[in-house]
Image 1: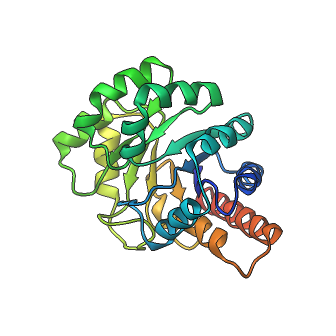
Image 2: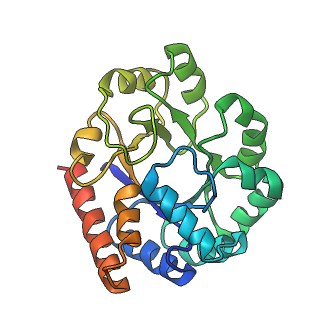
Image 3: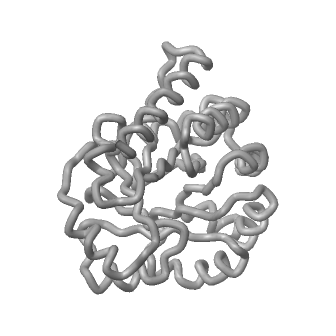
Length: 246
């Protein structure tokens, strides 16, 4: 069974709605939830998630809300915090580790923290029983891939192309997937540009997909009611889960 990792922006359009969407995604078959931490400069994200970050911040998002929301979600779905390094640095990794343990979160995804700079933090994170997800990009050399994936936990995040999320580019992933599989048995999930149209192709040779912009677009659609947003997100999650497993 191939897995679906679903990303949503925390606090969009409200903390209570984030909980409702997360539980709906769990019911629809999502295996892991990425709770995005709104940040003013989300460098790896495209215009959809960037806009979602901005609106959540304008609505008054606070980190304390992330912690409260997570505690309501984690009993129902394996949950990771996805955020940029700045908040982790300013609040302190030790504090984030403590809050994650209290909320039942299983780990972190920090896209702007390079592998080499993450090493000292990763030791503390893993010692606390949490994980820090490792990234592989199509531009990585075989030697670098071997170094990164040999220590990977939970899953390896394979970036489908060089660029930002939601751009929908296509790159041949089979060679890099083969290289990863030579050096690690850790599941490999493909992210960036994955939606209901592309999921079946992107998952070939991989163990799952990571979907973000396709869900966040719906969160941003002001023509839909709350219930319509939840129904539409649930339908897309079910469709993607079915397509990657048929």
